Length: 155
Image (cartoon, rainbow, N blue to C red; front, top):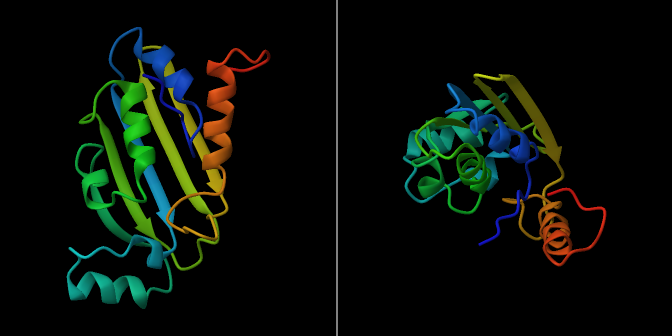
């Protein structure tokens, strides 16, 4: 099975770092426009806070096991980071709604026996599906090129 990194980078480095032992701490903060994060399970208070926010609002905090279940269309980066780290429960995830987030932002912070790492990516949302980033289909194509042996690809 092959898995593409999609909208986040640095997964190869996290995999390499975990080869020396489990990472001690891994955090992912995902920030998106409030409307892309609305879910049927949200209560009226949370929806109101998101819809009327003038700044960032923490929508959920949990593990990479918990968060994608609540946000199946917009937090697959949490699953990607967890696969790289090798543990769904080690990755602590915070989902933030921000009315000023004209780009989707993912910040990954990790530390382990070999060092500390921080990756931040910002993407334009896909106009047809603002819950995902425009870069994702290109990341999939790049992964397919690497799998099929196209030279010059980073694995």
